[in-house]
Image (cartoon, rainbow, N blue to C red; front, top):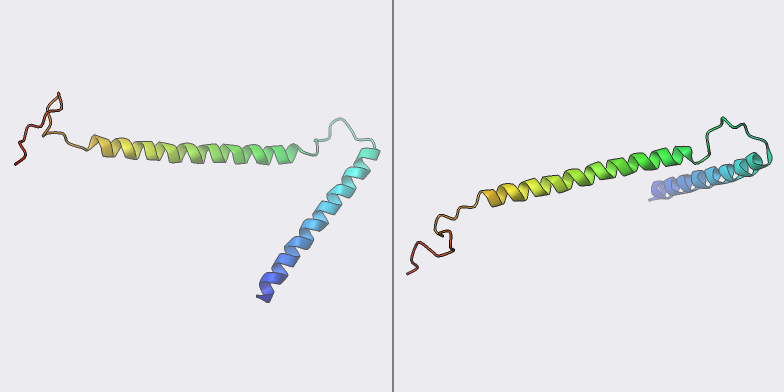
Length: 94
């Protein structure tokens, strides 16, 4: 139990440290002049987000395709030998 609490505190302190360092760097970079060839601050975040979007699309597309193929395969295996084209039963029920 104590190790779980210490891990959560370590993660929390790391989060706040990173948040404060990015806030400090953003205020200092806004006052200094930056070159036009530098990469925008959010570019890496946008790349990671687009990768996650592509991964989510492929995952959902694969799942939906698998469900569709399964349903088509199961429906295709049904046999209607006891019903004619008009829907009438060929075998009489006793």
